[in-house]
Image (cartoon, rainbow, N blue to C red; front, side):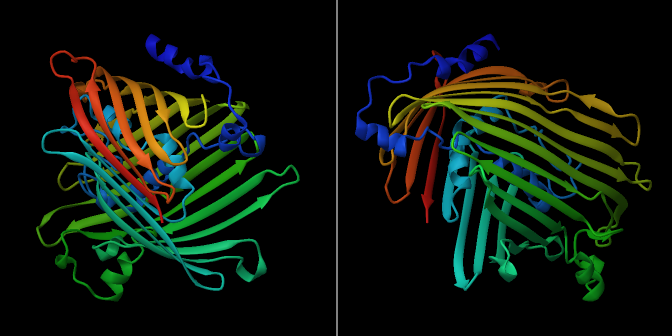
Length: 455
């Protein structure tokens, strides 16, 4: 990782400007003489993804009851470049940060990862004013990858300034084709400023998972043999999540945390006669980010995330029980040096650990280690409107351990992208990826396309 360490300092050592900026250029980049405080990264997309893996367990690649667990991070279909494909062709942290600020929009990303497969992600969100303080909200998430096969629509209502208070109340429903899987969320949120003119936003959510399971099978009298699997919870499965954001002229910070109540569900298969079992599940996550602008054209972001999923299956009738703990810990840093209004250099470093502990048949837990280092340096052009471009070098160094040796490798890649940003808010970006490890023999390493629009 010596090369990665060099990359981390590139943006800080870059000459602050290729030439002196004119007054017009300066105001375009730093309105009113303020520093470049455009969001460099966010953890909102990460927290939403972990939260969705809990709400939409049906959308996991191997399904709701898979032995691969809740996060399902290892798949035999993955190759040694899969993680690099995800990082270098789908939305990057800056794009996630811009998306997090949009109340209405759509974005689509597709990336070729093999001859028959294309990674694809679709995000859509829309807010419609109904009457007075009431808004209708709708969201949709589609994901086709080697960890998820997800189509998740969500609808909700929002009441602003409830009873004359600064609080907003939101109620939402996750729509599933399988009725018992529907989830209900209730959220309470508010924003304010303190005496130092810092802005703050707090949101707390409570979710009832599989909220209608008992009503459908008990209240409506639906027969258990009408479904592939019948779920009988020992207690109501609940989850909570909180988000705190703060921002000032030269810094911004985020804190995301969540956890589910340890649920216990008895699963039977009346239609097929498979052996029943009892499954216990719990998910927890925590993430923090700090972005600072120490100099007018230099922005830094530091972040750390932790997520864990525990699954325990008790199957005395079949002897196929197991205990599985999945954990992902990431620490990272990003930096941007603005060269002039449209041009900038961005660098990124991240270290990821994905340990798993599994005990087949109720034996002792055995640990599987999985470590990854990632580095990226990019020269990019991103004006308020006009042609965009990116030339990036990326390095991924992974040791996936004995459980997934086919994922252990070091890969270097060159990413070339070009696109256009319209004043209407529509953006299109197309890119080609080049394999620097085998550039002479087989240089082409895939193509990708991203579209986004503010609605």
